[in-house]
Length: 352
Length: 271
Image (cartoon, rainbow over all chains, first blue to last red):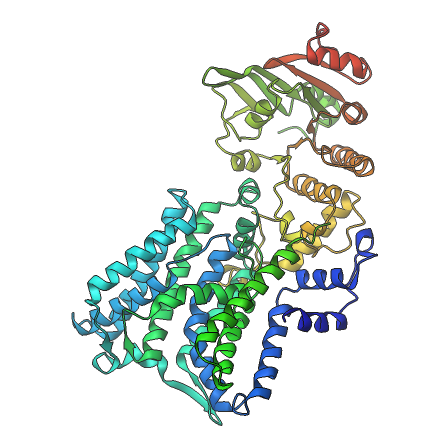
C-alpha cells in the first residue's frame, strides 16, 4: 500500500545526483534507486502516504475535503503532534518515552488543581505546571544518564509512577474548564477561521514548536549532537561530545514540550481529566514512526513527525467519514505502522 | 621563544627533542600488568610505527598517550613539558588527535558535520550568539579544503552522509579530521586494518601527507608491509615494555617479527 505512492514519487526524481567515483550506484535497479532516494529524503515516503490518503478519502466522502472537516482534523491532531515532537527528540537519541502520556496528563491535572483547589492564579499555575512537567522529563533523563538504565525501562517505571501520582492528586476527578481561570483553556479558542477552516491557538503553538525544533536540530551544534548521539553514542563520545549532557537536555526539553501539550490538551477538552492519556503513548510513537524517524536513532526529521501525526488524524477521520466501524481504525493504523517500520529497516540497509 | 629566529641552528637539536615522550609508564589492571615500563619518543616530522604482538601493551601505551586511560605511574611529556590527561578531550585540547580503529564518525551525518563534530563553528553576530546558528557555509568550505589538502579529490560532495562512503573514504574523513585539528601529534590506530589493497595504499599516502605537512604521526599497525612502507622508525613493544626501536633500513620484516615474538634477541636501539 505504501510502496505504490513511493515508487510513483521516486521515478520522477530517479536520477540521483551521483557523485563521481561511486561505482556501486552505477548498476542500481529501480528498486535500489527508490531505496537511495528514500534514504536521502526520508520525508518523501510519509508525504506520499499522506497525499494518497487525502485523495483516497476525498473520493470516499465528499465531506472530507470541506474546510470545516480539515479544521477538525487539525484540532484532533494537535495534542498528538505536540507529544510526538518530544517523542521524536528522544527517539532520535535511540531512546523511547513510554511516560509521554502520563507526563502530559499529570501536568494538566497539576495545573488545573493548583488553579482551582489551591487558588493559585491561572498564569502562575500554568508556569508551575510547565516547570513540574519539565522536571518529570529531567527525572527520566537523570535515570537514563546517571543510573545508565535503558530508556524503555526507565519510562516504563515513570509511566506507572506518574499515572499513580496523577490518581492521587486528582482523586480521579475531572475538573471542568468552566471552573478554571480562562487562561487555562484559552488554547482551545480559535485564533482565526478561513471559510470554516478553524485554527486554534493550540495548533499555532504546536506548529511554532515544530518550527523551533526544526531549526534547533538542523542549524545548531546541539542538533548535530543529538543526531550523533543517537547514531553511534560511542563515536559521539570519542569525538568529544558530552553525550550524557545531550541526553539529559533532550529528556528535559521533551518534558517541557509535554507540559505545553498539557496546556493545549486542557483547551481541546475544555477540562482536565485524569483518564485521557492512555492512548497517547502509542499514538505519539505511531506518529514518529509513520513520519520516517528510525526507532534505532540518529535518523529522522521533526517535519516527518508532523506528517506522521497528520496521517494518523487523516486515517481516523477519513475512516469515520467513510462509515468504517471505529473498531477497525486501530487495525488500519497498526498495519500502517508495521509497513512503516518494515520500510525503515529496508532503507537502513543502504550501505556502500 | 627564540625558535623562529634560530630555526636553522636548532634544527639538529630539535630532532633530538621529542614532541611527545613517555617515560616509565606503568598500568596495571588488578594482577594484570598492561604496561610494565612504557617508554616512547616521537620526534618532529616523523612517522613512528608501534608494533607488537597481541597483549604486548601497545594499545594500553597508546591509550595512555591519548588520555583514554590514566597510567598508575610514569610521566608523559609534550614538547618537554609534563602533561596529565584525564580524558581524551584533554589530550585533544593539548593538540593530540587520535583516529580510533572504530573511527568515531557518525554515519548518518555528512562529511562536513563529521569533520567538525564536537567543535562546530557558529556564525558571528546575533545569529551565532543568540540563535546559536551554525556557520554551515564556512564549515563546508573548510571541510572541502582539508579534504583536498590531503588529496582526497574523489569526494566531490561534502554534504554526503558518511555511511554512503567506502571504508577507505571513511578512514580518509577520520584522518582529515585529525590532521585538521591536531596541532602537535596524530595517532592512528590500525588505519588500514579493514581496507582493501588499493584503499590501504591510499590511506598510507594520506599518512605521508599528514607527516609532510609537519605533523608527526604514531601509527599502530599489525600490517608489516604497511609499517615498513611508511614508517621512519619502528618501535617494537614486547611483554609490556619497549624491546627496541629499529628502522625499515636497519632490519628486515622477518627480523622485526622475530623480535616482536621473542624468537630473536632485541638489538640495541638502532634508531
